[in-house]
Image 1 (tube, rainbow, N blue to C red):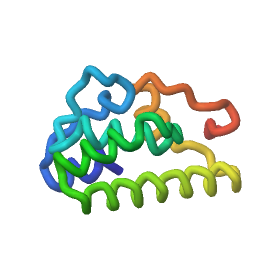
Image 2 (image 1 turned 120 degrees about the horizontal axis):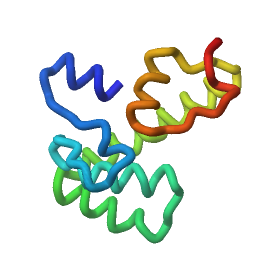
Image 3 (image 1 turned 45 degrees about the horizontal axis):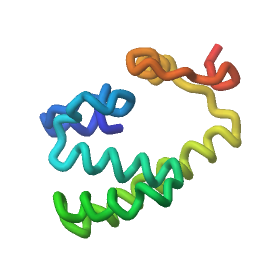
Image 4 (image 1 turned 30 degrees about the vertical axis):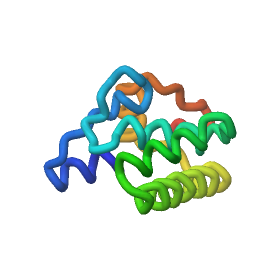
Length: 110
């Protein structure tokens, strides 16, 4: 979705930043947003307070609320789709391979 959104709005982004913390995401407050979402997804109580404060300082308090909502929505969608057995599309597999992500075999489409 981020790649498609960036393409639609002509805003550059580098999705490699999702798996490589040394890569610049090319987004305003990108590093802070990545730190916040990592802390949220990993349920990291040690990192979350600082990540939340840094995101609020760089992008405003509304950005924290929006980031939390998006992270929660993605978690819900992933659990729902996995729970009903939806397979990963070939397009998504291409992106996963590009990012060096391992997709569990039960999610591969045939």
